[in-house]
Every structure is written in C-alpha cells, then in structure tokens.
Image (cartoon, rainbow, N blue to C red; front, side):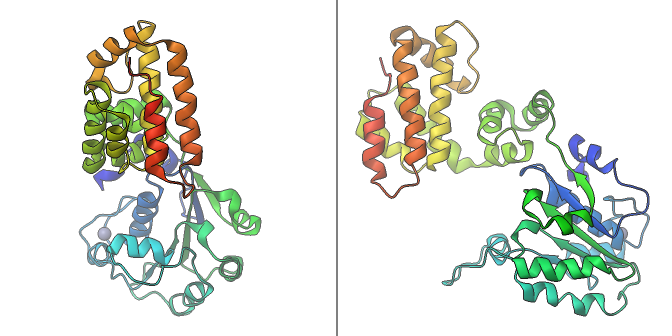
Length: 327
Ligand SMILES: [Zn+2]
C-alpha cells in the first residue's frame, strides 16, 4: 500500500503495540489519511499472506475479497451520507448523517458466529462521532465484552465528542499533523506551485491540501477571477459574477491571501500565495495604500462571516469588490 507512505502515518503506526488491541481509536484532524490507515489496518488483520500492521500483502484471497468490498468478516459502519457520496448516488430523500442503532445491532450477525475465514473479524466505524447516542450505547456494550478475535477500529476527527466510556476502552492511536515545514515539503513535492495556496486553504492538513490542489474546476475559477482582479479593467459586477461560483469560504481565503500578498509586496517581502500573479501584485502594491488593503481585508472577513446567510450573495460580492484596493 504505497499510498500509506506518509511520514506522519508511519509515526502514528510506530506507536501500535505488538499484539493489536481489540479496540483501537484512530483520531486526529481531518485530511491526514486516518481512514486509509484504518482500512489498511483492517485489511492487514484479515490478510492471509505475510503482512504487518497496516501492510497487508495485497495478493492473498482475503486481500482480494477486501479490495472488492466483499470480505465476509469485515463491516464498515459509516453514515449513509458518506456511502452515498462515495457511490455518487442521488436520492430524493436526504441521506442520514448519523450511524443508526440498527447498523450497530446488525453487527451481532458478524460477531456471534466465528469468522468465515479464520483470521478474525473487523468492524471499522468512521467517523465514530456520527454514532447516534443509542448506537454508541449499543457499541459500548460490545466493547465491554468483546468477542474473541473481534477487532473494533474507530476513526474520529473529534474524539472529545465520543462517550468517555467508549474512549477509555480503546487503545488510542492519535495521528498528528506533520509540522508546517514537513507538510509544505511533502505537498510541494506533489502539488508544485499550487502547494502554498492549497495548504493554506486546506488548513495545512497535507491530504486536504492535495485534494484542493487536484480540484481543477476550482483552479479554473480562481484563474478567471484572479486575471480579472489583477489584470482586467473589470468592474465590480464582473468580478462578482466570476467570484460567485467559488464556495464562499474558499473565496474569502483566496481574497484574504490577495491582501496578504499585496502587503508582503509592499514591504518588499516574498509573495507567498498567488505567485503566478507576482508581477501584477507588485505593480498593484506600489499604487495602493496599505491601509486600504487592511480595510478591505476586514470587509473580506465580514463577507466570510455572513456568507452562509441566505442574503443575496451576488449583491454582497458586488459591494465587496466595489471596495477592493484596485489602484
Ligand atoms: Zn493478504
């Protein structure tokens, strides 16, 4: 599993005790690959070839069944909404965001009989904080008396939201974000010149940054908007039109970084984010008052705060770009 070769996952894995605990809690911020790690661990438990924790052989019959989503000794509980998103299905009824008690009770059919293939049984729950309270209680009962050869792997972005009694029954495997320079180095190697922007927009979580870097639609929208913003004589209404398709939080990030870059250029420092517009930014910075940039940054943050309100977004954007420091 070469896609698990992330230094921060290797670090987390090194904390695993030799005999895999019956219940494991893999926790940490989003975008670090916790679920991939949990899947690899699950597969390695069931693997019938030579394997190490999270390093299944990938070629034995069990690994083939697992990869095809057909291993009879494995259950993956997650909210319906996540399954639907993965399948790309659309249904008129909104999929559930919680893991229901029925899903946990159904585990009985897995846990009450011996393993089909003799390597144990694995239940992966992700994210565990989406367990409905009654589902969490049902799970707790199972964790209190785990059947022999059963493994529970819980993935959590917010472990503090789990029942303390569930947490205390799990071996804790925290996955920490790499420090900023390690993350930057890693993302730069994969994402090139998009790295810095993608990192900043992904909250410096490397896998989220990579996802951002790969979102071609977003990068097209950004380029159109940035060209108009820095180069065009575009009016506020045109900028608003180009900005509208970009998700408000991302847009606010993008524009904040414009302010950051303008002020850096003004102080003769390096342009950090919109490097592909460096010359335009340097030209602009010579013409605008830094106080104006700071004021506009405030307006951008206010826009971000109000962005989820059902007000007329186009008008809000027009008003925002009307105030922009455009020299
Ligand atoms: Zn295998």
